[in-house]
Image (cartoon, rainbow, N blue to C red; front, top):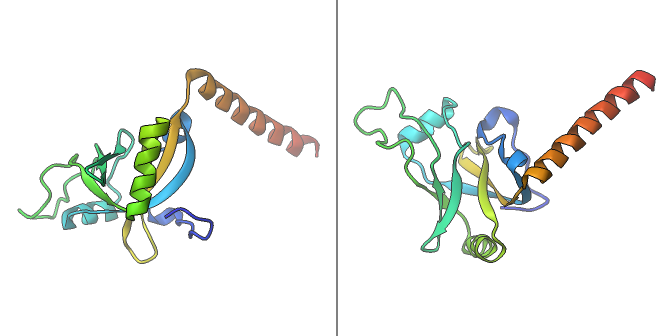
Length: 161
């Protein structure tokens, strides 16, 4: 859930990050959503094996789905392991959150981008999904220019201050 009193996720619990998302999109708002996983997928996540760089979330039939996230098979799992590492996975959210997100996607042309997968304090797998608007090539250039200037400014202040 989004809110000011949401606890920050600690870095050691983060399993996968989509580092390119903040470069490619303006993130308007973040949502913390649950994810339905098979037991072998959870074990694979706990080992730190997952990729969400090419994934996205979508709404279908009143439910949210994480598409194209790669969670490899758990090596020690026997025949009860998950069969498809890139299968769609259901995201868990309150009905009102699902309606808010789907309306923003339909009406405003926004995108649901997974930013990270992590385990919360209780050990439950969560997905941090950002409601995002795509950047143009010029926007990306401007962001890079601004970041470089901040870095140079900090360097100058350290040297002369």
